[in-house]
Structures are given as structure tokens and as C-alpha cells.
Amino acid sequence: MPTPFLSIDAARCLQLSAQGLLTSPKRKAVRSDVTAAIRRMALLQIDTISVVARSPYLVLFSRLGAYDPSWLDDALCAGEVFEYWAHEACFVPSEDYGLFRRFMLDTSETGWKRQKAWVEKHAGEIERLLGHIRANGPVRSADFARPGGKSNGWWDWKPEKHHLEALFVLGELMVRERKHFHRVYDLAERVRPDWSDERDTLSREEAEMAMIRNSCRALGLVKPAWVADYYRLKRRQGKGWLTRLTDDGELLPVRVEGWEEDVFVHASLAPRLSDAEAGKLGATATAILSPFDPVVWDRRRALELFGFDYRIECYTPAAKRKYGYFVLPILRRGRLVGRLDAKAHRREGVFEVKALYLEEGVRPGIGLWRDIDGAVRKLANWHGTPLVRYGRLPDGLPPGNL
Image 1 (spheres, rainbow, N blue to C red):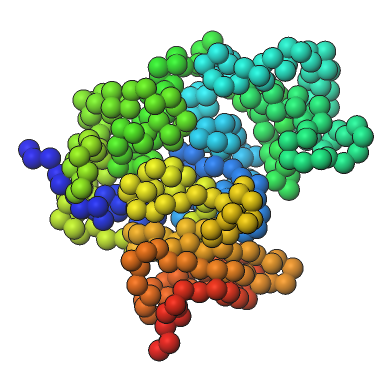
Image 2: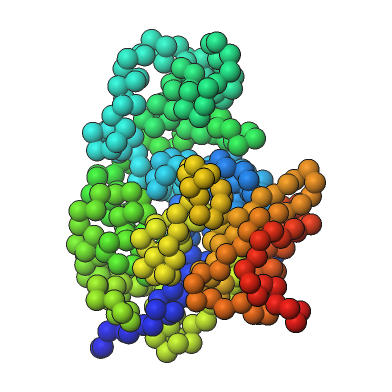
């Protein structure tokens, strides 16, 4: 049987299909859709910047449409998801806890050796902290006073914050819930009373292969160079992993126009592969994406697949920014067509688009404007900031004949 040959547009559609971004939602979201979307993506990255909705809530909105953000908090409280360091700090489906447990127990296989050293250095203080949690229940970092008063910056942590984060990384503590987006820590055995290290811990190879399987399923269409990044694995055997999954029937080899590398499609997308090859798999959704959306968090993959050169600039000095502080990619009908610098003024009910940029080669027109403006207004309404104010727009937007 000949290897399917895909256009670049078809390749994009397959990845967007896997990510839940090919078409707009066909019904109003319900509570269970939040956990289902996280399972589909495998990982939901956490970030605290709140210029617009914090990233995990925005990623879900891009896929679900208007939904109640408290549903994500509920999913964490209910134990349907948990927090840990995966791609970065992420919400992870509860059933994947075992993928990380070995790395919690053995920091020699991770970059967390400093956390273990911290716990050993402060053993007495940490044992007292654990005793306090055992006796009094979950805690927040805010429950402990800061010696000397005010913090001097993001990483100027008080000792208890260091202790809590170290114990979280090493699996002694878990995040039971979040209050006003602040972590509430509890003993791991109280959050996961069903877990047994002796019975349930996977080997390193088993855990890594499960991560690669999840990466391939979540991305839908993959190259060997892409799969390690999803869980921040070492890039040592990308092609070997995918060859093994192909032999097991979990991946299907394909060719993509303009690419010479091996490319694979996850078997769950097999029913859509023939339509993709025939050019019949169309993308219809327009969505404003988070800078930490899985579609764009790997800069190399976004560039190779979508021709979208993206770098978040909030950590760049203002004078050196090209686009703005918190710039959101614009996905329109299967293509990343632009980016916008936005800010939600919640008290005033205003959603400000400071600037909107189109990618090179994207032609302004009525259809493009209606799609982008419609997506912006849906996002603004969900924020509770229904008054949209546009600042700098590209020439031709909005079209003069509207």
C-alpha cells in the first residue's frame, strides 16, 4: 500500500484535529469537557500572567468556547487532574500520575537535584512543616509570614515557599486545589490514597514510552524531532521511539510536501487520513490562542508546520519587543495568520487590542476581518469585558466597504 502523501495544509489540519482546533464547538460546553480537553492535549501548561485570562483557562476557551473557568479548579479539587512539571508546570490527567512518580522518587534522572539538596540541608525545618500539615491540614505559601516584610521579586521566596516547592517536586506534597490561583499543598498520600509506589511505579523506559505515546496522540502528526519536546524528554532517540510505535501499529507513516524527513500520523486519525490526502479535511475554526498553547509552545514545530515564527516577549525588555508584552497568535481556518497584543480591563469592561499584526502574505479582506473580529468579541464577552477597543490595525483592516 503506497504511503499517503499530504499537502502542508492537510498536515496542519491533522494536527489541529488532534488538538481539538479544527472546527468550532458544536454545542455549549459542559463541566466534563474540561477534563476531556486536557486528556486530549495530554498536558495543559500553567502560567500566572493575567493580562488576559491566565493561560490554562485561555487554552481551554480556544477549544471549548464560553465555559465556566471554575470548572478547571473543580477538576483539580476532584482529583481528575493533578499538577506537576511536565512540558513546564502543567495540569495533567490523573491517570498519568504514574508517568512522573519515578522521577519524583529519583532526582538523578531529572534536573531536580537541587531540590533534594535543599530538603537535606533544611531537614529539621521541613520535618516540622510536614508535621504541621499532618496535624492541621493543607497550607498555602501565604499562610507563612515573610521575615523582613515585602518580597523583592518573583524568585525572592521565603523559606517556607522553598520548602513547599521542593516537597512538591519530590512528590511528598501535591497541589490539592488552588485558591485565587495560589497553590494549596497537602500530603501526597492524602491526595492520592489509592497509590502504592511498590505496586504502581513504572520503570523509566515504561514512563518515557507512555509520554511519547501521549505526545504522538496529542499532536496527531509528528516528526521524530518534535516528540521529545512535549514532555521535555532528552532528544536521544526520537526516530527509534516512532519506529517502535509504527511497528506496533500506533503510528502510520506519511509523506508531506516539501519535507524530506520521516513523518507519522497517529492511528486514531486513520479515519481522517484519506480525507486529508484528498484535500477534503477542512479547518473552519478561528481562535485566539494562548502563547502557551500546545500548538505554538514548540517554536521550531510552529515554524516548520505553520510557517509561524513566534517568541513570547513578556520576558523581553520593553524597548526590544517587536510586537508587545503578551501577544496572542491568531488561528484562522487552519493557518496562523497573525497575532494581537491584548489587555483585558476588567473593572471598565473593556477588551483592548493594542495592536493587531498579520503575517507576511496574509491579505486583508472582509472574510478575514469578520473571522478575527468575531473571535476577538467572543473572547471579550467571555472575559466579561464586552466593549472591544482596537488600537493599531494593519492597512486594510477593517475593510473600507464594511
